[in-house]
Amino acid sequence: MAAERLVVIGGDAAGMSAASQARRLKGPDALEIVAFERGHHTSYSACGIPYWVSGDVAARDDLIARTPEEHRQRDIDLRMRTEVTELDVAGQRVRALDRESGKAYWTGFDKLVIATGARPVRPALPGMDAAGVHGVQTLDDGQALLDSLDALRSGEGPRRAVVVGAGYIGVEMAEAMLKRGFEVTVLNRGEQPMATLDPDMGRLVHEAMDGLGITTVNGAAVTKILTGTDGRVTGVATDAGTWPADVVVLGIGVEPETELARAAGLPVGPHGGLLTDLAMRVMGHDTIWAGGDCVEVLDLVAGRTRHVALGTHANKHGQVIGSNVGGGYGTFPGVVGTAVSKVCDLEIARTGLREKDARAAGLRWVTATIESTQRAGYYPGAKPMTVKMIAELRTGRLLGVQIVGREGSAKRVDVAAVALTAGMTVEQMTALDLGYAPPFSPVWDPVLVAARKTVAAVRGAGS
Image (cartoon, rainbow, N blue to C red; front, top):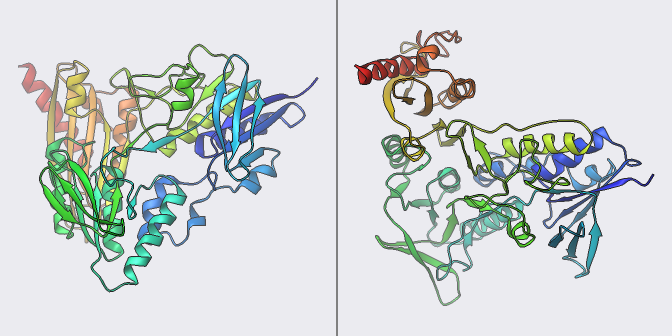
């Protein structure tokens, strides 16, 4: 019998994890694997790009988990600099364009994996394509930004960086620019930085960024990128004023890259991502799977789909898809929305729902916020941390946790992520047997202190 052919569109986390897992389960005599990647690199950590730009990660290659040559050694026909431009679902084939030669051709498939990722949000505003305006989605983007920074540092003029957006990428890139010796301004359209947090917690991030010397301007929607006679960026205009800039970094966020799938008639959800079942199979299509930043996933707390662009999920999606394609079985049940980040020594974490999410889901809730330290208060190096907890009114079911603090704070959110996944109440959380020693925690861990206070809020609201 002829080998089945698996075609993979996208050569990063989800796509190559799927290809590698399928290859582990089926050899080349049973399964031919053809993968298309339009860029120059495969299997790399996009989440690590800000740390490479800042200099914390020494070299680009440190972010690459597996090279194209390593994939090919495992009998995966990986075609670099080749973009899939058309998907014929009925005919079970894809049309690919070799960017180097300009040659276009069709390739048939028995099974298909769509892992096209996400694209940076780039508003259609005047000057947005000017020299000196950078996104940071790919390794090529990171290299272009570094080249731009090096050129500016070698000159004698001012070094002013404007970061547009104050989400995860925005605050991480603000830190990177600061470490590179630039004067940094962050322009944020929202009420406070880190819209993934409630505004009261975002205010703590704002205060810390100000203390680091980063100017954060809230309520500033960009209207235009200003340029000089040479076409290079000179500033950023907003509805709240204008800020000079020698380099602009876009940290507005990303959206699913699903144009190819949409054109082929595949189902997409309210956030623009492909819709799949628990096995990561595209709804209504038995031979097509999708994973990574191009899909929507189930929010286990809110009970609805959402778009979450994280490498952790993409790699898990790939493992599940590869298992199913290769004859095994796997499922991806959903997420609770856990994410961590940092700006210099300030750590930021969240999991579950914000207040606005609970409101959108039609829930009633209570909140509690506590101030503590990440170590015993008397132990050297003890620093403040703030924990906010959200619980469902009456039932006390945990709905979400947000943490802002210094070193040792952020990963405490994992305790809450496990509690959310298990459907625990805040009262049940107070009995968790967490590790204790003065270098790591007060006698009552801050998460448990927050749970105790939230229990009291639940009881008080019900009285």
